[in-house]
Picture 1 (spheres, helix red, strand yellow):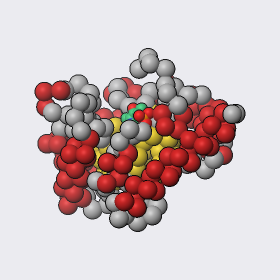
Picture 2 (spheres, rainbow, N blue to C red):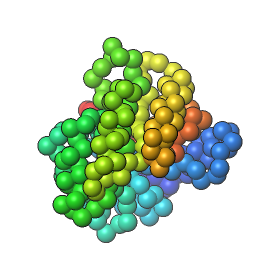
Picture 3 (cartoon, protein in one colour):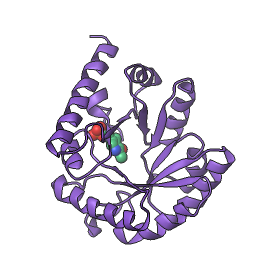
Picture 4 (cartoon, rainbow, N blue to C red):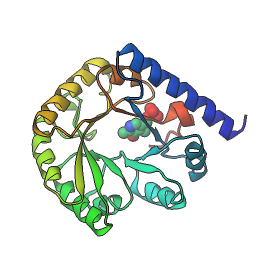
Length: 232
Ligand SMILES: *Cc1c(COP(=O)(O)O)cnc(C)c1O
């Protein structure tokens, strides 16, 4: 099979999984958006995906994302930044990302706002919230207690729009109860910020659980592109 046939078949299967999960959850058809995570894969794959109707792609490393977004500048793609953010890269990321999903500390908000304004752009920000038990620190993500302050800072910042929350399922724990907790955090956020309706959760292995608990965006890498090299 050609790469294009491969990607088309994988994409079709993922779209069917999403549609089945949406239907099983009794949710509105089309209520879950697919972000295809293209990290480690070449711009040529991004180009094929765009031809196959993908409109959102996710990347987790700044340099790689910057280069690919430049190579694909002629395509009308929304770039989602989903990786951990060094403070000194935040402004540059806001120069090409339409959504920054991994805002996990207050300190990132000012440089993101400056970068968005310098580029004359409006950037959606999601707060990455940790679903790990407190003792398993270090995987990224704000604690639930930190969300309100980060949300307020984003909401007050020029060039930024508060979109909602993002999370990754905890390691070594079933994803469903974690995504249910995430739904609770999202409800609390919406009480304060009614437009912050995005819940980005669910990856190749757990998208059904995420959709069941209200994910509006799923981030799918390996089920579309195949397995990545093991260097992460
Ligand atoms: C790599 C990555 C994904 C995609 O993971 P798959 O298991 O390959 O679908 C989703 N979200 C984040 C934050 C990632 O880093």
